[in-house]
Amino acid sequence: MIIGSDPILLTPGPLTTTLETKQAMLRDWGSWDASFNAITGTICRDLVEIVRGAATHVCVPLQGSGTFSVEAALGNLVPRNGKVLVPQNGAYCQRIVKILKILGRSHVAIDMPEHQHPTGEMIDAALRADPAITHVAQVHCETGAGMLNPLPAIADACARHGKGLIVDAMSSFGAIDIDVSKYPIDAVIAASGKCIEGVPGMGFVIARRAALEASQGNSHSLAMDLHDQWTYMQRTTQWRFTPPTHVVVAFRKALDQFLAEGGTAARGARYAANCRALRSGMEAIGLRPYLPDSVQAPIIVTFHGPADARYAFKDFYARVRDRGYILYPGKLTQIETFRVGCIGAIDANELRNAVSAIDAVLKDMGVRDRQPLAAAA
Image (cartoon, rainbow, N blue to C red; front, side, top):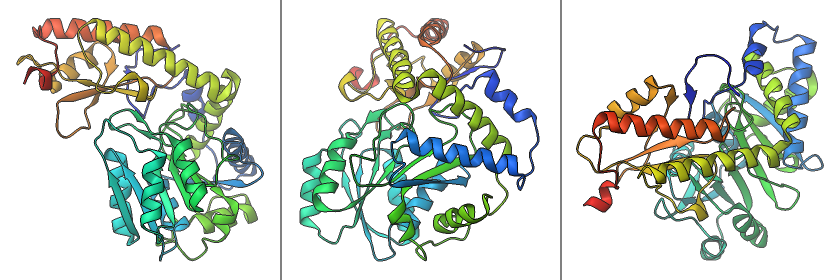
């Protein structure tokens, strides 16, 4: 699927894009030009349709990485006197907690190991125990370990208690179905450089219109004021401040390809096939996934580092890169791991080739003992 000699990015974003998406960035655009603003408008409409939210939700794009949009959603949709419950099982859940601390928003976390996920029963119990909680903030796919958290069960619990739900869908949007028509989801947050397969530089918040309208005055920041960004765009069709023009038009091109492929169902099926090829191939060469298949999201897979003393991640990473594949370091704090992404403009055959490259590198390094360090200990 890839044309050219660039290395394949086996990461959770940025990721490998098609030539068509790359070529979309070769033209310069005026930020106030009507044709550019029309592109922004079509993107927003299509993104809302992906989560089946046309009747209730609107899309607010924002300059910056996905984390900018997560912070903006929390800082706008949670009132200053609100309180947020964070089911916490990984690095990106921890980032939400850190954002809430900096924003001065009251919050409480349900802490659990990185190989476990929250349940609807956990959310029920926490909401019963603390009526002051107004919102739940949930990472859908926790790419620190590769965990798929059970969004439907969590959304059901929020609905039973009448609480708002803010979903960090950074690594799941476009690959795993989210239907805002079924649940009272206040916001779905994602970014351009993830499963739609655009390039980094733009985040977006798909917000319940009623919640966004009620958020005026909540923002801690001028640049991240979603209500102001949305109302300005409605009035003028323009971004308030200089938009990432090349990123936006590349995202439009990537979104066209996403829709032509068959949308979330088709994109998710390709990534699931990638994930199966990766996991089975890596297990065949003696490398063990950290998570069981039952909770594995088809986005990125965490693998235990080999126990062999000759294994060192930096050397391993550099050698695999020289063979054409960019891996990702582990995010877990207690054990030695590395991560391999399944997303981007790649197919299962590319993942099988990556496994062959990894196997060859380990042989070159003299790594014979490939059981996990934890198991060896």
